Image (cartoon, rainbow, N blue to C red; front, top):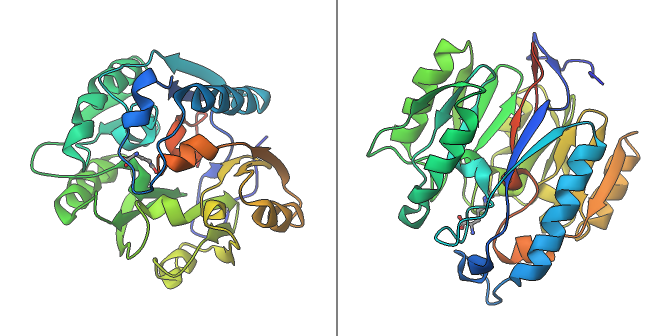
Length: 273
Ligand code: CIR
């Protein structure tokens, strides 16, 4: 179902047509992480299955790439590309350990989008790119630098999109702490990102009460929310959204969340979160 547009847009928001995901490897317990507890790969795999099922229930075609044991963080496909619609950029991930993940993602996207590859020394993770209409807000984080932003901006301009930068003072990525929830509405956790930059996109910014509430995945009138953020879920439900809670404990242990587990391709003429 398409939803009304918000103010900076001349395209309608809607759920994605297709989501590309990648299975969780047995090596997931060797992922990059900042917390003390390694994730359990088997439980993470079950949670990943729940995520795929939630996408499918929302009418999204789910394309699942096989796990690669040499890529412990490979299930976080969002970081490997930025999709504009008919075209996409394959990123140069900010963490050197993750650069081997992009080839499989590029191969999966090649039949669906015209691809360009971000050259060295640019660094950019897709988790730092928040799309709202024709604007891409790019987080300047520990993973994404100014050169990555400028490289993305050049490719985005060809797709009719504009790029703006915003410093990320806390959190792994921009979308670790702020995401689009519904037309006109974003959720943000903490003060690591200047909310004026989000409001400048024409969005109201709702304060997420829990850290896991800063990353939700908007799928039309439905929104996926971590089960670790029940108050954020209630807040979004009072806005009339259909909230789908998902268990993600092992994904969070790897510093991941909802958006980073998929690459979403919009329906023709629409944009998606
Ligand atoms: C990493 O540190 O790169 C992974 N363990 C987590 C990546 C999460 N990706 C994302 O939020 N876009």
